[in-house]
Figure 1: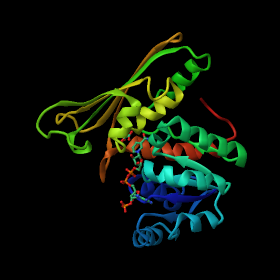
Figure 2 (figure 1 turned 45 degrees about the vertical axis):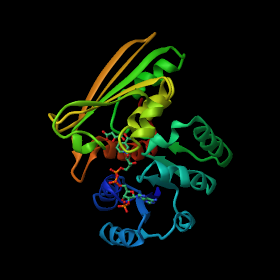
Figure 3 (figure 1 turned 90 degrees about the vertical axis):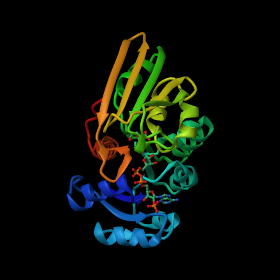
Figure 4 (figure 1 turned 180 degrees about the horizontal axis):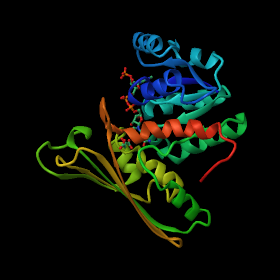
Length: 260
Ligand SMILES: NC(=O)C1=CN([C@@H]2O[C@H](COP(=O)(O)OP(=O)(O)OC[C@H]3O[C@@H](n4cnc5c(N)ncnc54)[C@H](OP(=O)(O)O)[C@@H]3O)[C@@H](O)[C@H]2O)C=CC1
Ligand SMILES: O=C([O-])CC(=O)C(=O)O
């Protein structure tokens, strides 16, 4: 598999290190990178033995099968349609971009027309398999996520005391915290949708990890799952598990037997 990468931050560099340097995806390489500043892309390209591109359209004209988005939700909104129109598959980690149904439907239609695929990693959470199975007959009654992070991982959080920064729907949460609560949108996509998925965001100076507690109930029974994630070394907002989930999604794409 020949891969293009948009965004050379924490997750982007982890994937570059894993694939191009450590060889964790045999038969695959990241052939090109694009970032906001060409100088940065160039420096990353020499560090991780790949090519730098100065525009997404140049990256798309290169010989790649799949593009990884590891930038932000605005990049997904700007470039996802053109990536799919070019016939490339697309892996999106800033899944909050798909919160609006009209955009989701536009991308789904493009995939159908162009015979391309979108891959959405599970990111910083788990439990999606349970919700998917429950929704296969449409019998899920409630889904919620409580996210607890240290204040330095959340915008506008007080540094000295625990505080609830947000309580409400996933659609409102992602609009207010576009870099912090992508997890609520992946839950929405497999479950009840962004308006019916409940979110609580807590800033807690007493914790060092990013934790997410997912609760759901339906005809299958009940789910309660808590992940306690170590943050990425250079970006406390992002959990290491999110970067790992990108790699595992790429690995599954190469597998003949699908589990889960
Ligand atoms: N689905 C999930 O569970 C999770 C999703 N995420 C999301 O993953 C994404 C990446 O996270 P992370 O790697 O930690 O973020 P970083 O901030 O470390 O990296 C983002 C990179 O994107 C680049 N970028 C910004 N704007 C553009 C643009 N217009 N075109 C190209 N590149 C651009 C930035 O460049 P520059 O350095 O110049 O600013 C930066 O290098 C974020 O949207 C984050 O919210 C994170 C955790 C969990
Ligand atoms: O990494 C995390 O713990 C969650 C996160 O930032 C997001 O969902 O955007």
